[in-house]
Image (cartoon, rainbow, N blue to C red; front, top):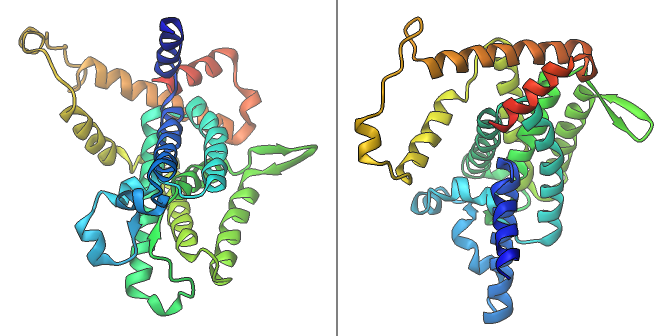
Amino acid sequence: MTSLTHDIKDKLKNLNVFEKIMAVNVLIFFIGWLLRVILGIPRQSTLDWLALPSGFSDFILKPWALFTYGFTHYDLFHLVFNMLILYFVSRTMVNLFPSRQSLNIYFLGIIIGGFTYLFIYNVFPSILVDQVSVLVGASAGVNALLIFICAYMPYREARFFSIKIKLWYIGVAIVVFDILGFFTGVNQGGRLAHLGGSLLGYVYASQLLKGKDIGVGFGKFLDGIANLFKTKSVLKTVHKSKKKPFAGHNKDEFNEFNNQKKIDLILDKISKSGYESLTKDEKAFLFKAGKD
């Protein structure tokens, strides 16, 4: 039993950031299922405090729901579908982009998707047929990643069985599918969140191609929240040596800037000539950067 526990802990430690997100999604779904089986309480009731309500006044009472709804699923098929897509998309993201940047895209997609849902439901309620009360699911974040990749590397080809399809075709198909789905009146809340996430992914990619990372501020905000839960040794803080500046920046900032420039050059090469055009060293550098 001790060996099994050690193996599980070791496996969890080696998961990448998106695999950990998937694990949290599955855990929350399992908790809802367990409470339903043991206490007979419907999953919608046990996980309601995580879901994003459509009413703005209800949202004000639980603002955390703008974030937590992306970790909540009521239906098993919904969970499996989202996690499968997230798994395959995240493999590309962590290999080509820094983990922090990928997380910024994912979480901003969830937040913008939630805001889109709230805005339409409260400002233009007359255009809605499907009056759902809450929003759940990771789809907005998943769509943000998908559209980001399609917009950043539009001419890279994906293989579908024996057919090669350019990524921008896939991106357009995803958006058109959600727009048509919205006007059918089925799952309109979910479609709005999808479109909000897709918009974020497209804007993020467009700005990054111009050399501007719009998620930097949000990333610092997440770091600030994470630091609240970290305990630092007083001695380590007092005796921590100051790093020498490089052109007005410390060594870590200077190295991070250089690494990002190198990543941008490699990604530009991929967008023009495809992933196969990279050298062995360039592929190794991207892989290492994705793990950081």
